[in-house]
Image 1 (tube, rainbow, N blue to C red):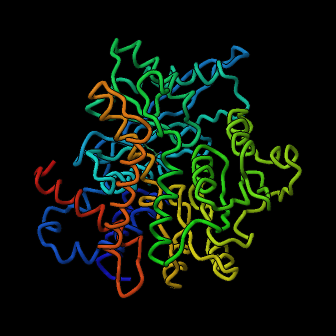
Image 2 (cartoon, rainbow, N blue to C red):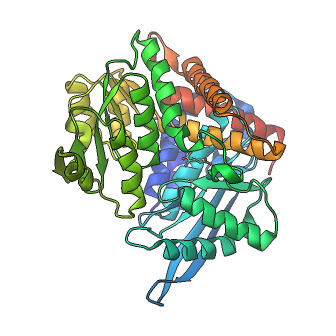
Image 3 (cartoon, protein in one colour):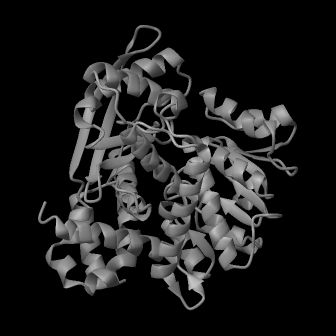
Length: 445
Ligand code: 2IT
């Protein structure tokens, strides 16, 4: 490794001890943009990278609430307002027991580059809580959301910071959060995205992350002279993102044979189609966080405590959570004849897995490119809210298509060398340059 990168990372690690996921996300970006940084004295003099890794503002707060037994519970709430060079802070809220400051900082940092890639005017942010909906009633979830917003409301706004969903935050939670914001502020504004379709939400937003990822995969396949039709896919997770991806793959004539949960994976060799796809939404709404019931419902095999990456497929799409695919999984996929992996979860692959793909000149897309469709349609929801108007699903889908194509072009422009496209480099450099130039133009803030 280069001495400049070493000392940069050493400085970061000593200022942010214990934030392993954040360090992982930063190192991936720094390694790929270092040449551009080194070659541009204006960036260096302005310490653009050093500023980029320091969130503009980090808010941490107490979230007290009462459970159904009348007991007091305390969770921790966060909002990391990472970078506003390109627009209001924008990014999801994650409610999951694994949430820590490190997780939200890695997500907020990546979000800044992802949002830059969408070409829409959005800065980067992320928030959430260590609250988990597992085993909770709807009333408990509502009380938690109301308490969370009772503090968060003072920090956000349609021109300041616009949260959305992420793991554990879907339409139901956005509804409760929006209701509380509106009550406190007495304002009906586009302060959150992922809203219900009857009250300011955008058509295609629920599908957007999965659809966008599959559009991106189509472009990657096109480079290889291939198409989705006839390909088999393994997908992990069973939430909103997996659901959207599976729906689009089916529409395009591909076949998905796995979904997974924290408990293991199911293998459905006939393909997850029709009512099986709708069943995924039921599973998620049950608040149980397990995938095993799918196997009982449809009489297929369940592999407890295992990951779907051992199944022989053409294309693998991690759609669950960070670091869910490691180097041994990557090697298994490559050796089994897989031709493409696209992260649909954020930082779905470990650094070792990413390096393994790149060293093998394997077609690999990082989350900040492949999964940007979700936040892109959030950006389109903001536009529609500002206009007080709703586009048709065809209109939104057409724009989503164009945005994903644009991101693919950006990755190619900055990542292609010979006949190999390094999508990690392409996405990081493409996302970085735009944010860096905006920061330079806006002075030392
Ligand atoms: O990771 C992501 O891009 C999201 N969770 C969506 C963020 C958003 O603001 O729609």
